[in-house]
Amino acid sequence: MESYDTNDKFWYLKNCGLCERLSTEQIERIESVARIRTFPAKSFVYLPSDSADAVMLLVSGRVKLYHITADGKQSSLAFIEAGEVFGELTVLDAGKREGFAETVSKSSIILIPGDEMRLLMEEASSVALGITRLIGFRRRSVERRLKSLMFRSNRDRLISLLLELSERYGEPTPDGSYLDVKLSHQDMASMIGSTRETVTLTLGELQYERLIKIQRRRITLVNIESLAMSIGEDSPSSTGRTKRSAVPAE
View 1 (cartoon, rainbow, N blue to C red):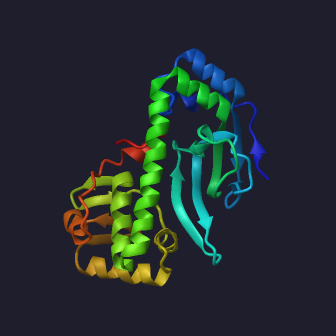
View 2: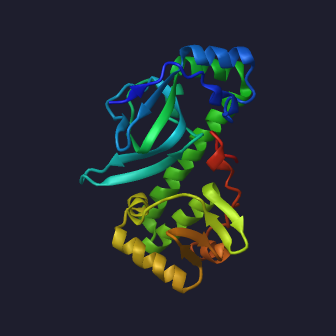
C-alpha cells in the first residue's frame, strides 16, 4: 500500500511548469486541498475501475501508463517522468479511469482534485492552455502509435518510436540526438506491439547501418534525418524540453 507524507509543504508546485504563472494565493489553495502519496516500485497508482477524481503530478520516480489488450498483452502508452502531469482527462470526465498507471520505481505523486483543477483552468488561461496541450500531445502520440501498428513493419514502428522519443527526450550532442531516457528492449517492444527479440535485432541492424549508436544501453540517433526519411516523417526537434516540464512544448 502507498504511504502518506502529511508534513510536506509542496514546495515543488511552485517550480511546476503548469503552475509557474499562478499567484501565491492560488498555489496556497492547491496546497490546502492536494495530497501527496509515495508508492513503492511496481505498484498501481490507479486501475481502469478507479474513479477519475484527481489530476496527478509526478514529483519523483517513474510511472508507466498502459492498457491490457483483448488477448491479455500489455500495451504501453507512455512513461511519465518526474515533473510531468498525468491523469489529466479527469478535467473532462470525472468517470472511471480508462487504463493502468503503475510505478516503475518508488514514486512520489501529488494528487490535485479534479474540481480544483477545473477551477484553476477557469481562472488561469496558462493552466487551461497547458492542460489542453497535454491532452492533445497524448492523443497525437496514441494516434501515431495506432497508425504505425496498422500500417507499418516492425522496423518502421521502432524507428517511429525512436523519433518520438527524440522529440521528447532528445539531447543534442556532437554524435547526434542522445535519448536521455531509460527504456528496456521489452519496454520498447510493448510500445510498438512487437517482441523483445525483434527490437534487439532491429536496433542491431540500425547500429550496423550507422543510423544509431548504442553505448551503455543508451541510444543516440546518429542520422536522424535519414531515419525520418526512411518512414516518410519529418525530422523532430530534439530539444528535450518535454522531459523537464509538466506540459509538453508545442
